[in-house]
Amino acid sequence: MNSQEIPLGLLGKVCDRHDLAVRLRALPRPWVFTNGVFDVLHRGHVVYLAQARELGASLIVALNTDASARRLGKGDDRPLNNQADRALVMASQQAVSLVTWFDEDTPVELIGQIRPDILVKGGDYDMAKLPETALVQSWGGTAQALPFVAGYSTTRLLEKIRAS
Picture 1 (tube, rainbow, N blue to C red):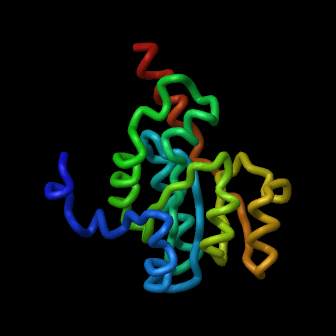
Picture 2: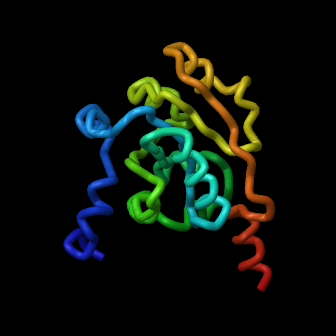
C-alpha cells in the first residue's frame, strides 16, 4: 500500500520524533503517554487505549521500533507487523491522538522530550520501580497502571494460532 492509498486522517496522527515539538503544541492537555510494541492489536489493547484516553485530553502512543521490539526477546519472528504498519493500525484507533516511535530499550528519553502529564502502563508493571515514573513525577505528572483485560495478549494469540 502506498501513501496515496492511506487516508490523510491516519497519516496525520503519525509523527516522527523530530516533528514532535510542533505536533504536540496542537494537542489539548492533559497529555497521556503510553508505549509498547502493539504488534497484533486485540481487544485488550483497544480497551486499554480507551481507558488511557479517558484520563486526559490527548493520548500519545510511542511504539517500539522493529529493532527495539526484537531486543525485548519475544521471539525471532517478532514483531510480526513492521513499525510503519503498527503505527497506521494504532493511528486508526479513535482514542489515539498521536503515534510516534522510540528505538531505545526504554522510552525514558522520549518521555523527557514530550513531558506528558500522565504516564500509563499495563497492569503487570510496578509503577514505583519504573524510571519513567520518577521522570514524569519530577515535573508534577502522575503515573498509573491500568488493569489488563483478562485472557488477551499477542503472545497468547500467537500460541493459539501456532497450535492450530
